[in-house]
Image 1: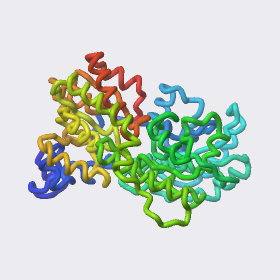
Image 2 (image 1 turned 90 degrees about the vertical axis):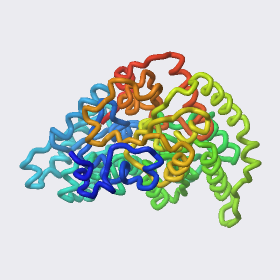
Image 3 (image 1 turned 90 degrees about the horizontal axis):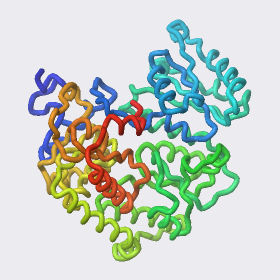
Image 4 (image 1 turned 30 degrees about the horizontal axis):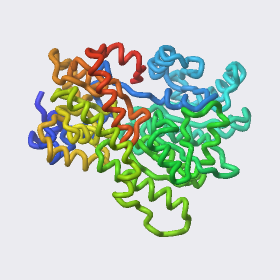
Length: 465
């Protein structure tokens, strides 16, 4: 099969599975364009997966999920729910071909909701109904039905979509599900000084670098579903002074909260290299100060000197771990992927600047905020190979010999057959200088332990396809 067959273009502009970053920088679409999208035919390795829309939605306490889909669409999700222990929080309404063709399953949904509200104990405080790709094709409007169910059962009922065909749209499943979750929030009676952390699957702790910075400027605590004990504590999120979006999955939800509840938002996506971290914190500080001085147009951006002084303890801790890593790794090759972070190029850049040997990056996407990191990496270490783990050519081509000494992330671990896989995943609890320090500590811990069992790591984490 020729390269040109992958997109019908000439060999001079073909879509391929991997390139050196020095070549990729001139035309990133050759590896990271729409042809690499997971919405098209693609390869999934045994280490492929993520949180999944179910696991994300179930971070809202006392919520029940109802999936409305053909049996074939729901079976892998049902199996995953059994494996991961949340089977009792999910129901499935499997619709038939006749119901799809005749369009009469809205009534079936309302009947099913009535039945589950009688049978599920304790009674759910909120309900999220997931529909599949079929509804994207049929264009079903659930507005009236949702209103009827809310009136009948006296709980919020929201719609979400499990529709992989929307992966290239503005609202792919991972973004849409967070929007649906936060649509459960009511209008607040009054505001407080808390900050709602959006997009993060797991937040930094309440004693983290980020939390301390927020407290320094008079804000906090961090609000996130992980800190909720019940549905009432989740609804308190609507009182937040602002939302801070740290991963793109939270952007649509933050926009909705701004428009619907008047909660201002600020985007400061994940980063690991020092200069970008300073840039993110400079923006956050200016945003917090603008909240402290409403109506004023002054630029509250702090000086670099003042920021370096405030973050000095965190930077010193980071530099100590960098020195340890240089000694412990002694030039060992590192591969990393997007199961570690939404910002793999920033992480690779940070590792290279720390004196570590990054040789491969596995990703199928290039968000706009990552382009400067790719460009700088191409200048300072142009021999890094960038590969799409989803390319159809990857099927059956797993290396039998190690292509890296250390893998950061499950996909990289599988693709390279690295003897050591560091199980850092999806930016969980990471942010800022402290976040990068935690990555280095995880690397050092894994190196000290030695050879990894990737199969067991994937099973223990509970990846969802």
